[in-house]
Image (cartoon, rainbow, N blue to C red; front, top):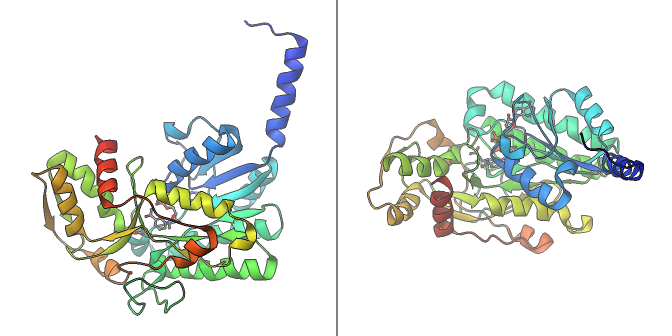
Length: 332
Ligand code: NAD
Ligand code: SER
């Protein structure tokens, strides 16, 4: 047993009390594709103890075990309120949701989770228990009648999926809580996100992750979208940087209180397959489009993110060749 002096004991106790008193960041849905990487990045800046990871899952990945983890169902608003009060949480990143393809299989459940989860967090911010909220929207807010190329920030929005409907409604509610209750909620319409640290959660854009896993495993992939299904995409590190940059921007710079268009790069399955073939010459691609093709057809080919560029200096960095290299290196 190590014996420490009374002075050392007092110092460590003061430090412990100071850590407890510091305001905390809470990431809800932290075991998912974005959550794991966001928790790791936030902890680099704020320290492991100041970023609480939470998810409905009882077991959490080892990669986020360096800091606190609290199991939480976002639908349980009483537990969320206690967690926020007891831990002095001032900033929340709400990532828990059902994504597009999974949501189509459970539409009413998806609507309930995607909307009620958001209300539970916005209400805490309205009551001034939380100071700042991040909530992600998606390119899924657009529909067949939106301009497909360079889709503007403000345009026709008629989503046809339950996921897109819930994201568009969520955007309207975010703006409402800002206008009526001065809630500092910030949001991005993420494109399809590509990463290797955790599996994607059931989206239409997931092929752009699965393709790398199969390319390395069997040098072939059967794609559930058509060869020319062009979609906006982004590498995860750019998306995490965008998330942190919008949250760090001065409050007055955030002029769009629904959600910002965010552009990375756009490509279709055929183009991605061609890039992979440069690295893995034996790679071959087959196509067996399913219900996700119809979803992809209703989404933009590319989006105009000039509002994000002007308001908080957004700039995408990683292009398709960079993504292919990072994914193959990372998965290898
Ligand atoms: P994901 O499915 O990988 O992760 C979601 C996490 O939420 C999971 O770990 C899940 O266990 C958790 N969760 C589910 N129900 C919960 C509940 N009731 N309480 C607490 N946690 C719960 O999703 P993701 O890709 O990380 O996406 C996060 C957010 O970003 C979602 O709102 C999604 O709509 C949005 N988004 C993602 C993408 C993308 O390409 N990944 C694109 C656009 C928008
Ligand atoms: N990547 C997401 C999806 O396909 C877009 O929000 O569902």
